[in-house]
Image (tube, rainbow, N blue to C red; front, side, top):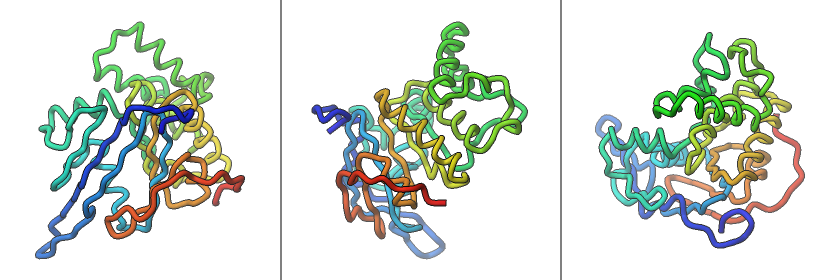
Length: 243
């Protein structure tokens, strides 16, 4: 189910996905027959110990990697076997990324960082301006648009990264430990920005190690040894963020 409890189309459909890596003479099974659907408007937390497969899954969902076998459909399109050029187009047009390390361009304003994917997408200047200003407003940074990353706090930098993800109007936002490098208050600001994006209709898949962070999502998927071992609605809780 998507937001609001109404039936919603599946944005993500992963069916029996396996991922095998070669490590020297050893084959490592990072994913072992994973099947997962995420509906339009869901906010899903993905949890599990290091090496459990959650980051490998996020890479496949983001079209940064291909599964060894199985099917991955994004908004109804089979993307697992696309060549790199077409996968890059899918990433640019349908996926917003939020990384733990922010990945902003130094000595470039928040505005320009958010604008960059629209330039790559050849969006016209007037529309670019409207969309960038709206995205920055959505994360509460309208007054910081001209500041460079070095002039922003860690939480503000991550909110710029969220604005950059939102500005492409993606089918899904993928967040990889988005609060991992932040103190409690900055983490709260980032999670509030993600929650506002979700309330506005965004579909979010977020990898986290923290039960407290995961409690902000509407659904939690647990990985162990390349398998999904639990998948269900997140129980409502009022918890303080982990430091």
